[in-house]
Length: 524
Image (tube, rainbow, N blue to C red; front, side, top):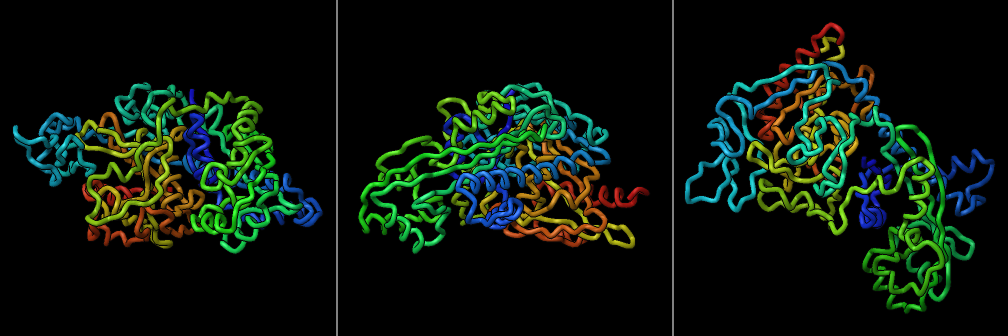
């Protein structure tokens, strides 16, 4: 069984250290106010911040980050566990006349391209060269068979990355590994709330002690220049605090690593060129070991990984304190390299669009060659939240949150709902809640899940999670990342007038009817 690891940091060096050691973490930024966290801890201890040792500071901040992410996941898990209503599962590929990737697509699909014996176009794809389209098939007008079950009923074995080789349910947490390598073994759990162990949440923080002063990130060229000049030819100590939390049990393990760093006698010209790279501005102590700055470090006494910001030996010991073997975190096969970014697999982006410079790969990310003949994102399937707002007096649905998709993304420039790939260790509902918060600031503690619709394509599935704002609560959506051009509350009657994602255009009439029906239920 592979146990997921959540890294409470967007630090690329920390993530790369883990990846090179066989662990592809889920990234969840903590958004901790570091000065406020230190001030609070110092006040609790009855001292000033300046009286805290460097070890105390990095330990305080590491735990603050881990606890913030732990609480964020707790909010997701609690909202998912409190879900009510029914899950409708549709099986469009089982409909008469639709078939799978080897059959002629339905004539109702406007995105399909007719094929001939002399063409290399894949059936139902519309793309030559053997790469299927990422535009979802339009099943409108098709009599699709469905089942209706309570929302917490385990789904069947579809949507598990490839051919379902793990033999787990779509809401289970087994996967084929970060790169589809099959290194992961199936897990019998159904998400965060029922896991006996994990996921593990790791918070880290680093500071550099030089001449008796604690230094974090310089943030500006002037500060970096001053520090680098003072450090050349001298030595200092790099401290990194670690806090590891087992989500399933709430148990916490803590520790700090440190190493002495000896700097070379570099020149002023070296300093200016180094600053021009931008690297020293956003790293503790104004230097790196694994980047441009490595050439100016003459030696290290202590843990080299701690210099990069995450000590592998210490992380392993902390995992052991929580009863987890380090090798249970491995989800990357030896020799595997970072997969290509999501944008590389997009076939339907808007003309002239520019993909993001950084698109961090996470467990569950990847393209699936679907049984429907198209390509879909999410090795474990995918999901999103359709959040509705009701009139305070009548209870009728008035608005829904919509995402204007980034031009570089699949069907770029269309409108849909925030969501994405289901990560290892979470259910489809949990994945939808996590993704909608990360992309659109839909805070799970402010909504109630009232139903779901799951479109099952055999080896892949997408779950639309229906939700309402909780009475007395307000969700303020916004675009949190480069997946969106904008996120907004859209009047429900205006939704059909937007240029909708193919799947949303197909499903919207039924989604609108279902939201209205749920809103009219007596308990609502």
